[in-house]
Each structure stands twice: as C-alpha cells, then as structure tokens.
Length: 182
Image (tube, rainbow, N blue to C red; front, top):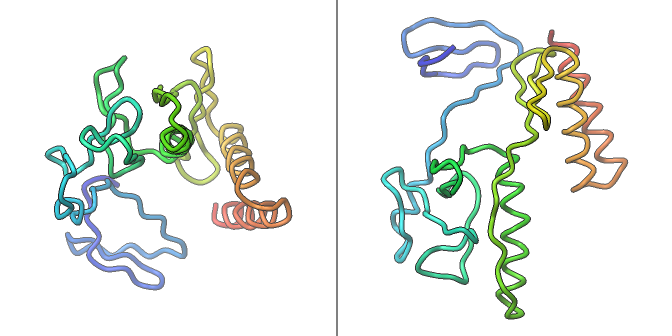
C-alpha cells in the first residue's frame, strides 16, 4: 500500500490515517527515509536541500577531507548516471568498505580510493516467499527461486559479521518466521 500513513500500531493491527484498521499477526512497515534533522545543527556540514551530507568521490566531506560519511544520511552523486544513489543497505555496506580503506589511507598518508557504485547484483524482497534478483548480464530471477537466492545473500552477509553458529541460528529463525507467515 502506498501513500497510507500509519497513525497507530497495535499488537495485532495497524490503524491508518484515513481511519481504516488492518488486522494482522505480523507487520513489516517500510517507508521512505529522511536524513536526521540533527545534521542541520552540526557546524561545518554541507547539506543538500533534503538535509543529507554531501560527500565527494572518496566519500569524504568536501570541506573536511579527513571526515568520511556513508549511507542514508549522505548524498553521493553517481558520476556515470549524474544521479544520487538510492538509500539501500547493500550500497551502504559497499560504501563502508571504501570509507574504511580511506580512513586507514588518510592515517598512513596513502592515496584515497574513489568510490565506484556497484549495480551488477541486487535483490529485492517483494513479499512472502517472492523476491526479484538482478545478476550480471541483465539476468532477472523472480518468485520463489529469487526468494531463496535473497535468503542465501542474507546468510552470506551474516556469516561475514557473525560467528558461524550465531549466523546460522539467526538465518534459520528468519526462514522459520517467513515460512510460517505465508
């Protein structure tokens, strides 16, 4: 549902601003993001009209080359498309890797790396056991098989940040929840 502001959340329902109530046992609410307003109170930040920090090709602030910013609160304009990057988790993770390298490089006096956005692989969960996966060569996989690939991507990420036992436990819990609520 688009353009349906939520007014109130209950333990088993959602009340919309237009007065409708939707009964549910599991609610997943996604909405557009807005940069944190506190950024407007930080001296020295150069912000766009949406209150996002403008970063350069190295993900550094244009007026503070030793301060780096990534993710939803930043605006990085893709030099190839001349458009800001969307606020997506995989982009923030990708930016984080470059920012970490650039922080180290700035400390040891090495040349900074230029961030190059990566669009070849992405996965979007659509609902239930359905996802759309985009692979190199403009290959799209939809439906249950797309959902399985998306879940494996989640597992790979969890394995990159957690011990094996904990990553598999969380992955299994996620699978259990999604397979029961379909």
